[in-house]
Image 1 (cartoon, rainbow, N blue to C red):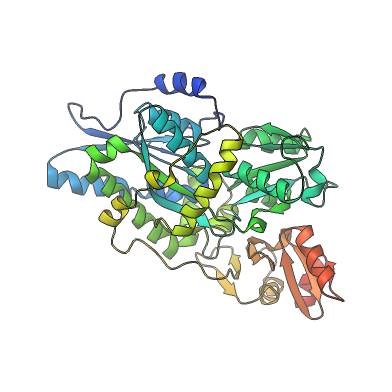
Image 2: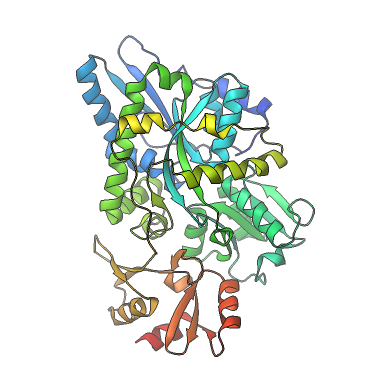
Length: 454
């Protein structure tokens, strides 16, 4: 698929038995990365709607930076390069194609990356983790949501309930860890359904499951559409989660210059997103059909995801802590994370590859017709600006959770009045915790909070 053709969404199970992955992999086209009579074709697997991979996928593709870098390289080495983009719903089919030698470079979440490493080694097509796309140091990229009218209030209420997730995904890892932390056995105490994100979203809306645990941008888009509310904020785990770029080891060794070009292009896309976050969100929304307001929640200037290609030690440390979760689910055996992680290509291709860590999230206001947002030091100041805006002028307003810092939609947050102060929370349980600890504090409606601020 060339960059100019429409993206095609594949809907394959995230975690499939290896016997099913092999037929899938061999059913697709010719080997990538090989010279034909006209060009060297590089095949990139990405997930358009997993929006904290956009600097290695959707946004990168729309900007054309990889093609530009390859064109410049072609002038130097006399070759012609073509990029074939393949869009998938999850990481599993990307891994299947990589282990068959049919995708050269792919992006996926931390749990799928470990499966990628395990499958690659098992099938004689080893892969390497060469960069990061987006991350959250507390784990706020994964969220458990329920229906807006659900009686569920805390994660403990999931005992005996049906929960949809994608087994083998980071969202499933968050669910397993959170349930155990709440004293709930993730196998015996809940009925977990292994479903595609889109299937799980439909199941939640239709009432056939009680909750949905998923990764970006599913929770945000469902809440934005009024189809869900947050039951559990993944940042409560205080454990980093991220997405990254993996490459076939053979391809990296045979075409290091092409990998350099990709990483240089990814760095350019990251710079673009950080300098023009509203424009980047609009571009991703146009490519994916996702609401730009939900994209910006994650990918904005103070969004839940921080974009930085560097392989930070805390992210690699978290990856090692993920291995036992996947082993317990019998999705991998032992994974040598240190052998899988390869910082050399990024260090070679990109000067000063690391950005400063993200600071504390701030409240933001996005007005219609504006290509920038306005940031505020407190939720109360944001509410004053929202209240002062003319009717219909506000496109989106965002506030950080007072406990975890996870950014959320102001009109979907749970508000607490504490004297003259106003605080926002992603979940009812967060608000309840705050109220219990502060005498006189109480939960108020969004309309009440607006009135108090103005």
